[in-house]
Length: 228
Image (tube, rainbow, N blue to C red; front, side, top):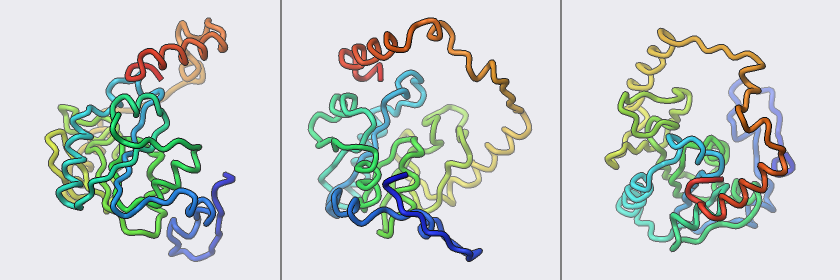
């Protein structure tokens, strides 16, 4: 946690911002102009689970929405997967830096289009600047036919939630559907995993780690939208 400075308070009315603060040096290092929108593109291992990868239609409609509603015309991509981001957004600048730089860019930006990755939660919520945030409706299962939130806990207030048609919804408009999803999960699911289940990696467990890493790098270089 070298990037953060923790501040402890005994007040029962504390806010998250009083616990997690970004170092001033990192804030100034990764400044984002007010006329620029940051796109938080998630690639990497998400590409092994196709339902987690957001379709291009999500990004295109979100870009249109933020242009129309906020007048933003400049875009910066923050990502865990530079090759993937450059492939799907060849015209936009992709931030090259470590985790701290990515965190700081999300923290500094006033306009954000987020993926379904919880990485963006803390820099967005702890920032002192007022933000215009678009996030994918239903979070990790965007566009699912059941209209269920894959994780009801991932509905956050003050953000705008974009559905598959490009329409934006407020927290209050989404809350009823989130509550229905939570009730459904409580009534139908009880998930329990044993250590053996958690450690089961299928055939991958028989392939030496160095070979798996080399194959992953090679495949991601050749097919950046499919492997990561």
